[in-house]
Image (cartoon, rainbow, N blue to C red; front, side, top):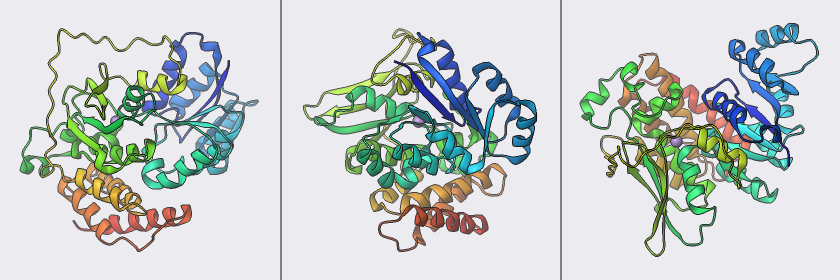
Length: 381
Ligand code: MN
């Protein structure tokens, strides 16, 4: 059976690797690349269009849109938010959301309403609007299949059956600051924070890995994806990043998914789920040259993790605020305006000054997101 795939964010890290997966998967003619969308990176986008020949493309930047129009005379080229929604909902079986930020949230929601399964690589979707998105998915019998390696590991370990699952165990590499002191962390530059030991990822997520905020966001995502209370989600530091996450069953049995760090496997699994296929060989794991170590996270050195747990437990608008304040603070850290402690203080301040909204609508979420960003820009943490 053929599967039509649309990729939002095709020029980013996950989008590029998804195309590598689709190029190397067995029976690749079963996968039709229906649409590709990106923000503005024409240097990467134009070769992708020529190589993968999507039926339509969408681009967010207007100047780039005009250039594409003159380069491809017959291709259907969409533009902006409306275009993104059209690309996400038209003739698609699986929507891979590989954009960063909130741009994919509305297109994802529209795709769910159109009964399109979601291969979810975008963190903000569930962190900002987890209740809304998961309820809609349930109503429309749509699968939300995680691409993130930890959540993919949990899906693979559990076979999506949580009847006997007592705990979800999310592993974290610990990032580049694992063995640094608090003082060293707070005096670290962006260049040091960007040196992730195991994963080669975008800048924002690499900084989030250095503070463990990334793990905190993943805890919130896991809560929504697997309908698990926060008390039953544990984080374990595992610097080698071989065990990608695990479940602990009620009888004490622990089931984990393992392999060398590679995003190709979770991306491909999301696209073939619940089946598996032969594909790109990027995981040459050997049991004989590895020592695996595990330890509990240092919540004092990495306060972002507790901030995320607490925001998640409070629910409602809190995770949206956590995410917005963090994103602005990370950008300011990358610009050299604030240090790592400044990121934490920005997020704390934003959460402490949260507006009183009980069951936020999508509009509430977008408004609070904007307000939190404005406030976080101006803060002197
Ligand atoms: Mn991850």
